[in-house]
Length: 143
Image 1 (tube, rainbow, N blue to C red):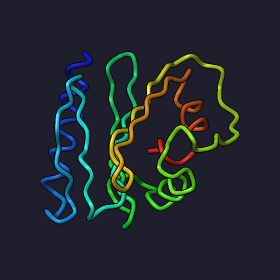
Image 2: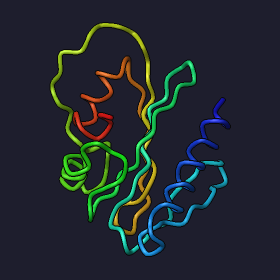
Image 3: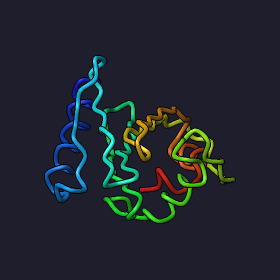
């Protein structure tokens, strides 16, 4: 299951690098642990692949570029604003208050990419998607 998810992330990054012009595309490498990561690319100050995983194997993914804002994320400007305030560290983005249902439907959030010339990654597990979105600022994983 994890291997499939990793392959899916690699495929998403590979598709992104094919669709984005060569000057703005990041190259993809595989780490020793098998996770895909994006090599720093001076043409784009920030580039992330955001994924939401559920226990049943469902994966939702979005791409996010900052400077200029873009990717498949529906609110790239808002997400980039939050990341800028946190210097690209997703774990430093302040939580937003939310009235989330007390329903246990666990999700794991993952972000891999780079902020300027530094590789960044984030993984967090939450009781449900509402809690996950609120805990990560309310915008970045809202897609």
